[in-house]
Every structure is written in structure tokens, then in C-alpha cells.
Image (tube, rainbow, N blue to C red; front, side):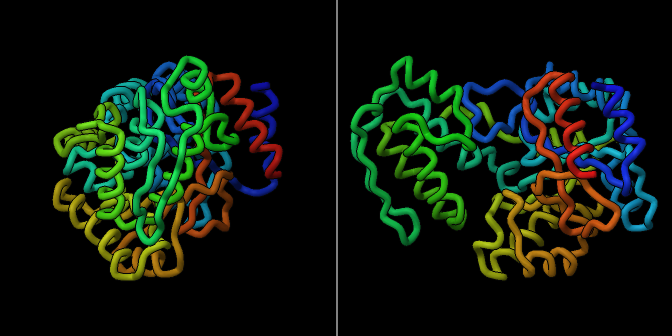
Length: 338
């Protein structure tokens, strides 16, 4: 398998490279979006890529793309959202392999210590032992209604289904149906409305506070991380907003204020940006250029080619797999896209 991948890399018809997209390096009880990679799998993946690719900082990759010097074995590593486990778990493994990485930070989460809305929703809906049988609340202009018939109490079979489920599958019970419906309703809302919906859900569920096991890096942790020359920092908005769902004024705030906050904290220019949810429009791109950003990464799950737009760079999402399955996934990408 590994020999085939090496041969495939040598025979690429066009120069292509890879940007890998990570979020969390930890083990989660539930992981609907398949965003968590265990430290053991992460180390196995690094062990593989360090032997088979030229791992470069993302800034170098984009510079090579801009100057026509892209190499087919180039690979860059990125992290979105700035979770605490990036600092605690990913950082020492990256340092031990001397591997560079870019971390895209959502500034409000960093400064407030607040859970991301989707993590709080997951804890409330998928892990609360017993929920009321009916729910009615306002989610923006929408009135959201839901009634349980069977699954308002968590039992062992439902817990098992939840742990095996991911968002690419059909919901297999009412808890999952409620979670996914609420997720879709909450995602496009302005930040303040998202917080209001969560407060109403906490009250409905009878939960005073939620477990903060998925918080993001503190300011001090980010500063310490950035002092290592292996690591760079990019912006990921203020509130992790679905940018194209908002007008130019909201987008401008999310873009400009995240850059200003990070530059003030780290004392350096921030030139890279990551679109939350991979979502953007023409207004977003204009705002990024005007703010002085030089590149932006998306969530388009494919390899990068020599004619790529610097403000729409694709990334390959990495899942929780060990070395052989990880290598097989990269091999399939190489053969499929040539």
C-alpha cells in the first residue's frame, strides 16, 4: 500500500499538495461531526506523513503556490477552533516530530472561556439523562417545536446509538433527530440569538451549567504556543459565525475584529484566515483582502493544485484513524484526482 502511494506521488500529472484539517486531538464520548482524533492516532498519522511528505508551514505552501513553485509532496497541517487539547495534546506531539502547524483561533471563545454552541447543544440534548417530553422555543424568526414519544429518557440502547452515530448518517433515535434539527436552526443565527436559544434550552432541560470539557485555549496558552517558531496563528472570526448568512456589517466585524484582537495579543501580523464551516461569499473575500489577509482556507475536502485560489484553499479533513487507514485515504485521494 505504502509503495503504491509513493509511486502515485511521483506520477502526479499536475503539481498537487495537501492541507490537512484537524480540530481536536482528544477522545470524546460523542463526536457527531467526526472532528476528534485521539492522541494515539494523531501520533501515528504524524509518523506516516513525516516519512512520506515534505511538511511545510502553510505560509511557505501558499508562497510556493503564488510563485509557481508548488511541489507535489508538500503538506501543511492546520487546526480550526483552537481547542485546549490543541495545546495540551497536539502541541507536544508536533514538537516531538518537529512538525509545523497553523492554528485558526475564534477570539470570543478564547477570551470568554465559553463552550462553542454546538458542543453545549450536544451535551444538553445527547447527554442529559432525562428531558421534558415537549419543547417549544423561538430560534430567530422560527418557532421550534418537538415532542418525544420514546427517547426523552436515556437508556443503554439509545446511548449506544448516539455514540455510534455521526452527522453523515440518518438519525437513529429521537435524541439524534432533535439534536440535528436544533443544530440546523441555531447555526445561521447571530451570536447573541444563539446564546439566547442555549439559555432557553438549559432552562428547559433543567441544567444549571454544562461540563466545560471542550473549551478553547486561554490567551496565555495561545501566547505560549505562538512563541514556538514551528507554529503560526490565523483568524477564525470572533464568534465562529456562518459568514454568508450575515450582512456586510456583521461580516466586517467578524473579519476585522478577530484580526485586531490576535495581532494585539501576539504582537505580529495575522495574514491567514479560516472560514467557519467553510462558509463564505464574495463579500467575505473582499473584506479579507481589504483587511490585509493573504490567504484563506475552506473545508472543501480535496487536494490542492497549482492553479488554486489563495482565498479558497481546500483542505482534507482528517478522521480518527491509525496509520494504515490514514495512508489508504491519502492514496485514494492521489489516484482519484489524477
